[in-house]
Amino acid sequence: MNDVVTISHAKQNLGALVDHAHLLHDPVFLTGHGRRVAVIVDAEAFERMVERLEDLDDAEAAHIARREMEETSALPVPWEEVKAELGLS
Image (cartoon, rainbow, N blue to C red; front, top):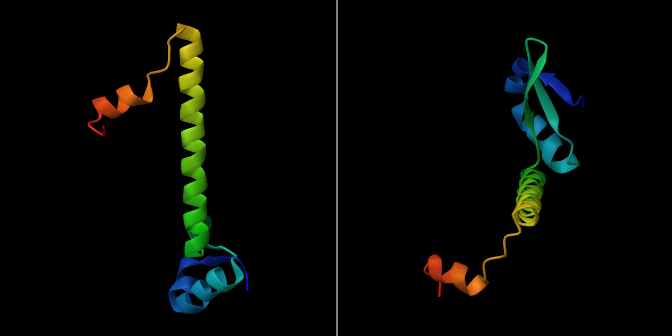
């Protein structure tokens, strides 16, 4: 099966395209007017991608915070203080 199909083809063959994406773990790109506009992807693969992106965002935020601390000579806020401010203690 081709991994790039038109939207009109996808409308007629949605079940087969979902099976392809799910069973083969192979995304299917949908095109409209000659451009990729959407993708059918296995749900578990999508969840893994989202988790990885969230992890990357967290790592980037931590890196920025560390750099800011170095640039300003700021000290880290103790965990007990953070919990108290958030009402978690």
